[in-house]
Length: 263
Image (cartoon, rainbow, N blue to C red):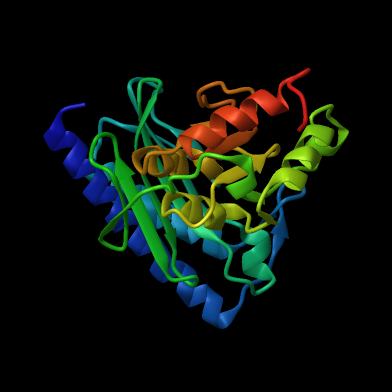
């Protein structure tokens, strides 16, 4: 991507995330009614208004790009540039008055994720990254930890419901047994912690690309490795995550493979 276009796109994504934050904080203060979508997941006026605010800014800044959003689907022809937008990832947390929700905005150039912004306005953090320019937390550059052994590893798991019926469940148990500690921060939070060196391995088996696209760019630019549970690079169809420091990713991937061993 042209460097000038990349810089303009990142600036627009950050502006759009800030606009969404104002919408979200407004409804956080006053409360909202909850509806159920066709897939039985919740949605609120905050989700929809935040996505409208995001789309307006992104379309003005980069009119040649299509936008695929959680609430309003795909707008424009799917060509090289595609925005991926989840205006309020963690709606269940939002409606239950817990601060583990965020706005996720990423840009794909062809099949490559090239920038991401992750804004958690009530939690109080914004992270962003673009390819080759590092990962940043509120203006300070961040880096993953220098962790090399499973015994030193702090693990966080998120949505793992389908993994409980998978042959890898026992391997995950063995990883947890051998690790330093286990947590379940979930949502954006454990990826932010991974990118800034506060934990070492994140595992999820039930995600949507809109949930993780921006976070993948951030973790990679912080020096981490971010794939699905099979070690495959992300696509629009990705449904699982194995994200970690480079050494721990390689070891966890080996142990989660069939016949990969336990201890």
